[in-house]
Image (cartoon, rainbow, N blue to C red; front, side, top):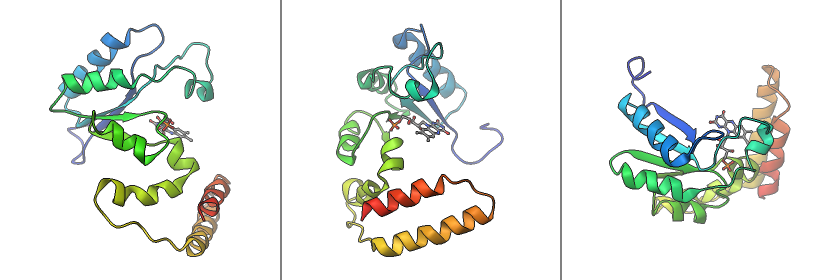
Length: 167
Ligand SMILES: Cc1cc2nc3c(=O)[nH]c(=O)nc-3n(C[C@H](O)[C@H](O)[C@H](O)COP(=O)(O)O)c2cc1C
C-alpha cells in the first residue's frame, strides 16, 4: 500500500484477538505494521472476540483496556499511536491525549454529532462554532434528497434525526 499511494497509510486494530495475550499480540502487530511503513496505528482498546459474539456485542462486551494502549505508546515514542473505543466526550478525548497522539470517536460522533462543534475550541484554541441549527437541518435535507436520488439507503434518516436533536 505504501508503494501504491502518496497519502498516509494508517492501520486500525484491536489489542488482540480471542485467546491472544494483548501484551504480546499488540506489540507484535505494531512492530509489523510500522516495519512495513505504516504512518499511524489506531488501537480500539478492547479485544476482538471472534468466537461466539455477534458484531454488535463485540463492540461492547470485551472490556476496554486504555492502559494497554498507553503502554504501547510508551514503547513507540516516535510513532503515531491513536486510541479508540468508548470515548464519549471531547473532555475524555483530551485526557487520552496526555498519553497518546490521537483519540478517535466512533459512536459518539455518530449518535451525537453536535459534540464535534466543540473540536476547534477544545483542541485547536479555535473559536466556538456558531451553528444555525435550522439551516443545518435544511442542508441535511437537501443532502439526503440528493443521496437518495442517487440510490442511497435510508440510513440518512438517522443522520437527520441526529442533526435535529442537536438543536
Ligand atoms: C455504524 C458503525 C460503522 C463502523 N464502521 C467501521 C469501519 O468501516 N471500519 C472500522 O475500522 N471501524 C468501524 N466501526 C468501528 C468504529 O470505528 C470504532 O472502532 C468502534 O465503534 C469503537 O469506537 P466507539 O466506542 O467510539 O464507537 C464502525 C462502528 C459503527 C458503530
